[in-house]
Image (cartoon, rainbow, N blue to C red; front, side):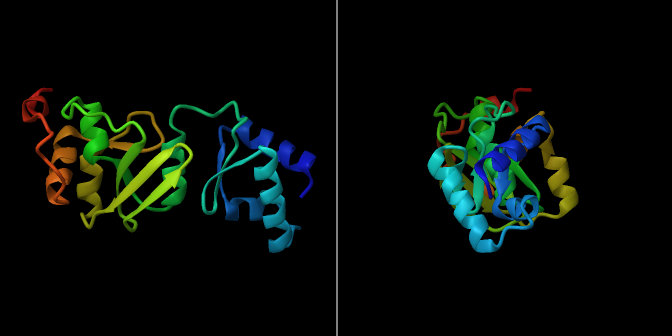
Length: 178
């Protein structure tokens, strides 16, 4: 993979609004590269600053015009591609004003995928697995124009209680306000 070719490909995908990529995305974008050549090319792009390795197998184009304030959410989507994910727990409750402490560098996400915590240059993503039925999940989240859907107030509160997290910081009066 040549640097100029990679820059052209990244610019083209940036025009399409994409700046977060999986390793396997690059394998499709550069099909003539062997796995070893592809990895060496990605390593060179990271070293030169053309890409940022968000975490294992996830890369971000830091020069993209499509880069927005929701890069951490874009990375979360990439980490659990193909699963249902939504912002919930402390992150959602904080945005609703029900928790006074704002988790600045942490994003809490409910997912049909496996649980796990990922540290990235953009913050920490904490996935918590849910076994709820799909129809129940869809009624618990709303599209707010961000990469990830968002839990309703009551769903975030129910999720917090269900997973056994600290509920003492929650202002329950705020939860009842609509």
